[in-house]
Image (cartoon, rainbow, N blue to C red; front, side, top):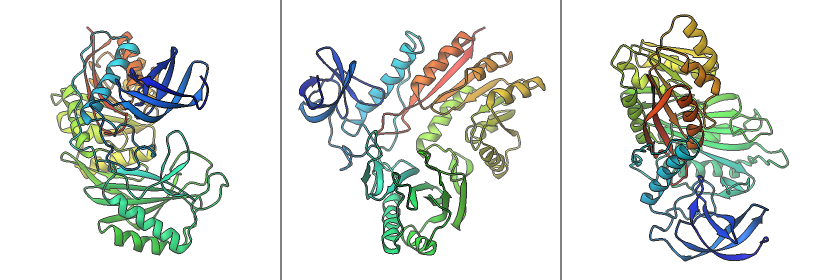
Length: 446
């Protein structure tokens, strides 16, 4: 097998990132935009010793679950991966990914997985979208590349994005504002970030230099395009990096933060704050976690990787005490302000590594009953899991994860430390992408 060879291939499986898998002469071939059971004609674009990558030419035998993509840029843009299939098939795939990881990586056989909680909306559900800006325009990068696909709109982003993208394009063209050229390391505008909430819309312009010429014209264009605009922030990122945001924020119009609500709890969100992107599903996700915690009113709850305090404050009225821990000091400051904003008095927040902070507060006499973990995609530090297992009063761990493989790995570690999985519920926070959120209840084995 070599590059540019063409084959017909039957798709027999799918990877965690949504690509189809078939075999040619026993070698695995990975192909995007196909469904299990289909026969496809593909051209080989990469051939290695142990596997190959194919590009779809045509579907010879389509699946009954195949659908026309809602977005005209779907097969070019790298933002989504599953618009070619029915939503029911997508949900089945995501539940299957969680089940496979729990069994294959976690080593748990016969463990029941709840039905996945579907999103009420599969379009216009995102409250935050980030668009790279290059000399080729504003849009999204093609899959596995930094080749820009120019977009006028994104069907999973909020409706405000289309108008804001148009306004920024007009400002850059009319005022002669250059886009950042990654190869030459020249130019100015690197990214456009749009965040919407019940309190309005905030726009962040990421620039390579502190200077922002003709900023007043940008503000005028954005205000005309978006009547509910609450703030425009310039984020300065001069580094040669793939990280989108730099450390410096400058508010050039309105307010630097945006107000939103989860259930009855309000939150002020900074440009760099982590915040779930699907508002309706966020309340469902947190409600499941709260039900798993089963707080009676007097417990001490550890809220680890707490960010701006969303999960703990969502549960605060049912707990005796909430102790939040977050590595990012700015997020800790926001969490404290959000607690004041909501009149929640049974919370305290600490900045630092979770395992180190927990060791300190336990030595001071804290006796937590329940821990909620919501780590980044890489999962938890094994030292943290060991530290939690050594707390004799800790009865439950509620683990929220956006990556099934690292979740399964950490479940295996916790199981070896005396915590057994009792409930697993996948939640579709990211329709039309291969990503899935999962909530797991781990209880101490007596």
